[in-house]
Image (cartoon, rainbow, N blue to C red; front, side):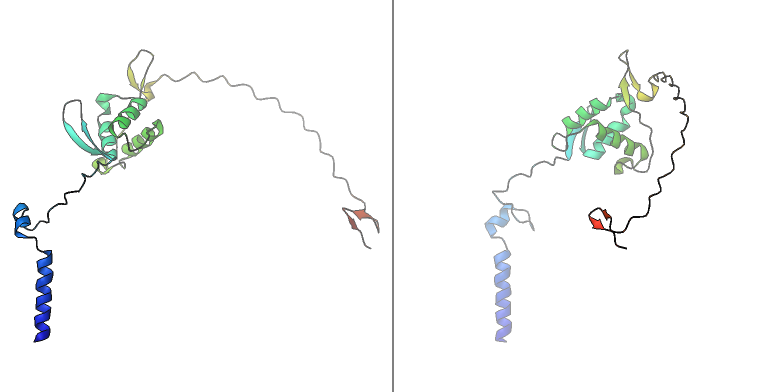
Length: 185
């Protein structure tokens, strides 16, 4: 019986130690532990950003979702690869030092439907846009092709001269030194 009383007393003591006081309980919602006073706010993630599109609608995106959003709106935006790099750097300044090859890879994956979950499984054909000589934005596939270089004639084949037969070496003489070794009989 004494052992049971000790266990009950120890349990009551443990419960009292973890239960907030009446003054603390009045300041917090029931069942919640009060926040630490010294807790610093969590820094924002470098991979999440708030973005307001040109129509004024605010969005919160992860990097790949934002890139897919921009590619999905490329038909109206018609941004060049350099402009996409600048937009990505501005929106996610701490994520990565974006370059044009990042745009090429992200576009390739977006068109294949495997870049992010937002557009997964659907295939697209978003082209790369360039600014032509007139200052118009056109898909790079519509650029005029450069005239093919004129083929230079192949050099005339030289007459082959017969290769000489290899020399037949005479048998080595007994006692001759070759490469620092004396030939034995």
